[in-house]
Length: 340
Image (cartoon, rainbow, N blue to C red):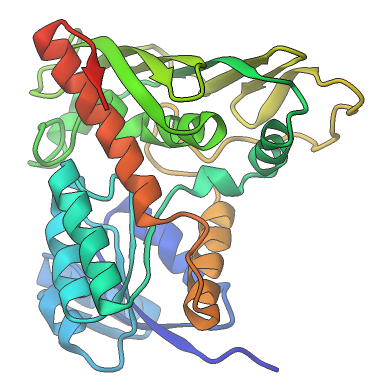
């Protein structure tokens, strides 16, 4: 039986919007009902290109009875406010990372999704990469034994021109810095693999850019399981490198360089042959090379609506990443560990 069409409005027109629009085209059950940009000229151009309704007022799309899902791809600092309006209107919401800039905003979004009986999914497309899905199953199944340590490194590069390209970039309230904007995907993977965090200690600094937010963040994380984690996220590392994630267990070790398996010691499990691949992360350019993993996540979010189940990446998942990063910011200001 062919799945019913679900009408989606894409709110936002930046570079990440193109990934979502390409993904929607590839999903048989998805129907693009409208697009929004703050610029009327850009909205019209985008709507004509996609062959759909366009508007410079996103509230028109939220009020539209045809629209079931609001897909929010605007600047980071606007995610929470737009999502709250959409949820209050009874729309299902898919929202790019970070889901909001503060934990209270995240909590309000989760509360509304429950009260209105609608779905809330936060984009963490790296969970849909083959190697990460495989490793998640192995770690949960105890294949490398008790997890001892998880290391995350995000040595990205962004120019000063990148931060000057929009008035919201590089600001704490509207963008966040190297960890809230660029490093949050790896933070999400860390929490997905290791489970809930208990505490965080660290420092943030702005070292090589003229901007308000940090371009270097360092953290030590304590997990409820007893494992530890370390995080380095930067946009000052030239020329920019793939994010790395290393898992050390009592029985084995897995190391990832981007989406490539750099080391594999898993008792009784052969190293998988996944071929050459890149992680869906912008190393020195925010544009992603493929929309594949966005498509996989959007497909799941739409299927979850029809099947009346939680999406594979929930609002609660998005909240955990924001909470950890906010905790790091507080730890950096106070110089003391922050309990989560």
